[in-house]
Length: 107
Image 1 (cartoon, rainbow, N blue to C red):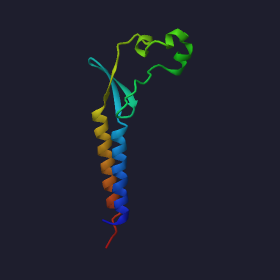
Image 2: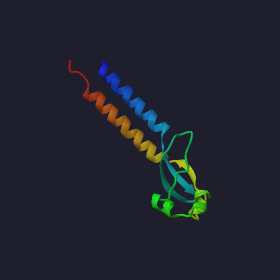
Image 3: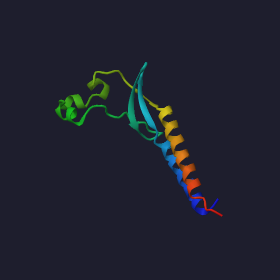
Image 4: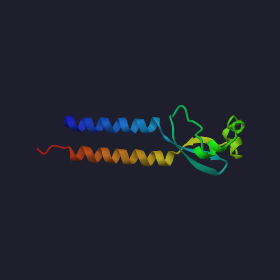
């Protein structure tokens, strides 16, 4: 393996690690699932599902309440979207492998 290929493998490992540190999340409540975007692995934020405009139009006392009270929805629990994360990892590994093959020097 030449040095360029080693850098490609290192870059692939870094990308996969970052994908694991900032995974895709879903909000789950009973059997309902909503995509929640990406957040840090150790701090899954309860991202806001309301629009910026609806926040501007909401009375100020309503904004002090928890989000699920504003939306009149049940409390959603964030869970990692494992299937989407696995697909991302597979694509990253395949692209890294392809890059290593392309960077192979002909002898």
